[in-house]
Image (cartoon, rainbow, N blue to C red; front, side):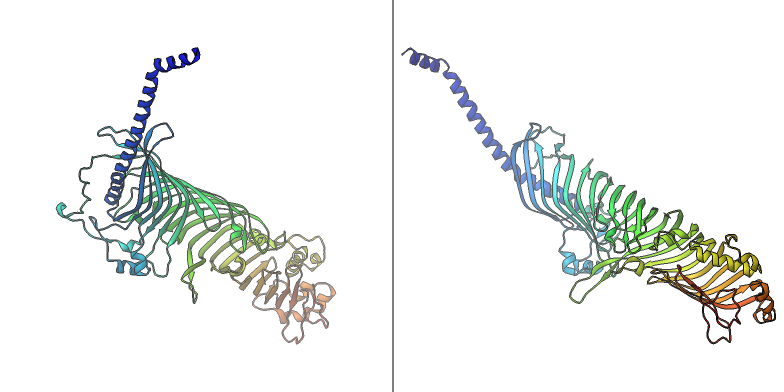
Length: 592
């Protein structure tokens, strides 16, 4: 009984607590209902402000499929409106001061796209967006909008020819009509903090015949310092299709040029690491590159450097250190690049190149036009380089064919294709090689013996310890399908000048040369000894044009096992012979 009386007494005594709790609950319910009603009433207003603001800024038609708002608590405990939209489209700008847009049919013709495709592609399309607006407002103070999150952003920039530039209108009354303010709307301004986006792409159309638009995939980007009339700062990750990798970049963009978006300025730095060159058939290595760029979306100037410490031609496999510094002018509408210059270092050799890299296209019977790779055209110059650096790169052997100082001028052409690079690569030019020494002891000994006999030092030629002889060479050359053609090779050592023409095959090192050898000494002095005395009467038959001896020769075999031969006029059957063998010998012996 006493317990029951105490419970009743407590309930009567603190009845006000129940009333207070009920009132608070009712107030909270009312606030929630009011918040929901406010959010619903704010939904059409915010939607209209978004469409109005974008339409005013871009001078364009804006469409928004769905837009919803809800009341909620932010991450920092601040109540506000959460907004989310789907299906936003902004079309190319309408007529503005100084710019007149041609009719869609003409625009399609100028952009190399079908009229329907060119006319029916939005300038900007966005799959989804969301943002948070706090529930606080001060007159004449912009409302700060937190981070805006975007997904599925696609920007499709028409070609420059889409915009026909005309003189600005003189009468401001007839200028561009701005969207009228919403009836009864408050003059509320919004200040954007950051924009973060995932899954974006940029397509830049071109009006150049035979070219396809350039497509750039952007994995993510972030914009800060957002302003309609000033540059914004950005950070982005771009997906590079080939070689596969991610390009990290940051810089500034804008302001957006409404009259021609492709002319919007952009500048920044980039970093591209651990790119596998094996994505290109025929070459291998891990490339890293850094640099900076500036210009517009359509035209960029890029200065950078690359480092590939393990560059190789996959068919041969010898790895070399390759570094480059370059200045490039990039046509953003199709990706074509003009290089002027590229300063490269291969091993110990400095190379200067100028030229262009353009995308190549093909069209099948049933397939539309598509890219099949890049066509590379460069002019190359080497001063004071090392020939062994080039030969090592294009050889299976760890030791190159020869060493020496090389000066070279050449054009380089690498068309697109499925064959390895060394089979597609074409070179045409000339070179001068000084202080050349062959890595093969056998070949170098033969060159030394030739030099000594050409000077008439036959006794020294027989000694195994004669001095090392360096040769000088020069020639025009052409490289096609892995075969080097030398039409006018000049080869000189002390005592001998040799003129040759023929080919050298990169695969296997095959030699096939013919020509003439001119020696200072006569045949008898070249042979020396008692054989030389017997050949004394024959000297007059081999003297020609001031040379003590002139004979036709050929070189066959491979660079590892060369075969040298003398082709004497009047001899019906000739075989590879040593230069010191008598052309009158009855049974010449082939030397291998």
